Length: 247
Image 1: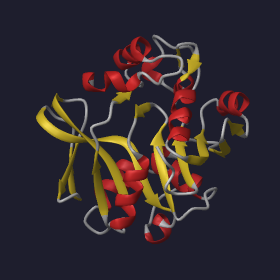
Image 2: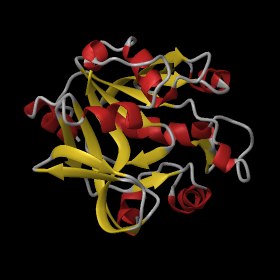
Image 3: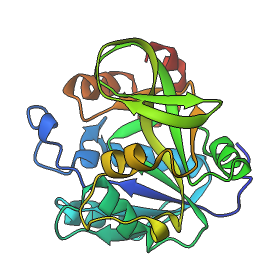
Image 4: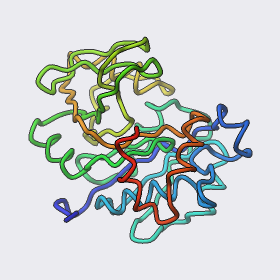
């Protein structure tokens, strides 16, 4: 994939404890859960590098020292900085704090416990074309009850639906592009949820766009999906695309 944007920066949310994985993973930050003897976060950073990201801000919290010691300030071609939370700030607080370490006008955000292969260059193009405040990557799912739904009309997000059984709908897959100055005019507490306190409250006041992708999507925070990724991912992990239709 050719780089269209010379400098793309990403915030990776890696502060989670991984409570639901305790039965299968030792006491490490969730993104450091081993997959084929490598931390899951390593595969995630490899994907970001492949997509043209040149700098990643890791929003760390729980046992941050494990992540910092492993990756340091550079991993392969990617510069790494750390936004350290002394106390958990919630997803919204983590993003707001990490944005202070970014320099670009629009920033990619990814969850450190989900894996997808969203085309970030195309997503950025759409974000800029629509002059969006926030673009959310979505995926069509069938017969599910684990996720809420993202409701959109002509790509404009018009609402969210809580988790319930659904025959077919579009879900949020944890990849975003946000304006660096997004929080300038948004009132928040120090600790807040990006999903509940921002997305669900401001979708009708601000320009939120859906970027629909048919990418693979795996949430390693769920033990059964953690086992799935163990079975399909390779050490080089380049073969993942062959399995995309399975998820």
